[in-house]
Image (cartoon, rainbow, N blue to C red; front, top):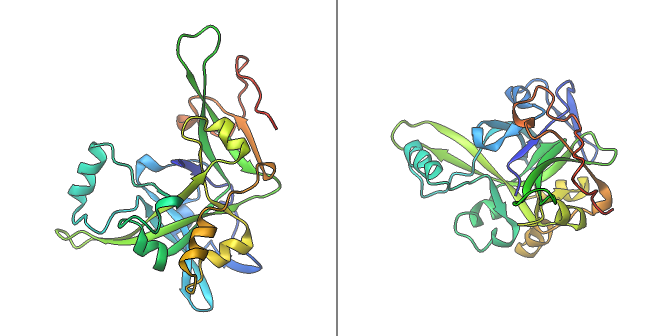
Length: 251
C-alpha cells in the first residue's frame, strides 16, 4: 500500500513530463509540496491531469477517493471510523470494481512524488514479536517521479461542497519491495515519463489501462534506507537512521 509519501520540489517553479513543462509556482497546490504527506490526515496534494487535448494541469486534490455512492461528508467520516481507507486502488481491481471502473476509464491522473514511505516487518532475536521498521524509498538520480492515480469528483448533497478526490494505484511488489513491504507485498505504480504521459491520454483501451496499471518499476531503479520510527512527527522525516538489529536488504 502507499499511505505516506512526499516531495522535495518545493522550491521549483516547473516540473517536466516527457519534455512537457508544467508550472507549479502559480497554483495553490504549491502549499501541499511537503516532505511528508500523511494520507490519514485527508488533506490535499498536487495531482496532474489532462486539461484538454493538448495540455495538462497541476491541481490540488483531496487524497481519499470518495465512492460515487457516498452522498455526504458525514458518511465519509463514518467510513473512516470503521477503518475503511480509500487512499489506494488495486491495479488488479481497477476495471472490475464498480468503485474504480468509471474513473479508471475516464479520469486517470498522475500523483507527483519524490519518495514514499513503507514499513518492513522483522523479528529481532531478542524480541518475542515482529517489529516494524520504517523506510524511505526514492528513485536513483530522480528528483521526482509520477505515480499512477485515478480521480473522482465529489459533491456533499447536504452542504453543496464540491471537491476532486484521488487514489494512488498499487500493484505487486518488485524484488526490493517484496523484502521491504514483506507481508502484503505491494507498491505504488511508479511510471516512466513515457508511460506517465500515456496514462493521461483519453483513447486508451481497457487492455492498455490494465497493462500500464500493472507496470512494475525495476528494483534497480529504486533505493531504500531506514529512517527513525518517529519520522511522522520529526522535523527531518527523511533523515537516515540505522537499526543495528535489522539485516540489510538484498540487492
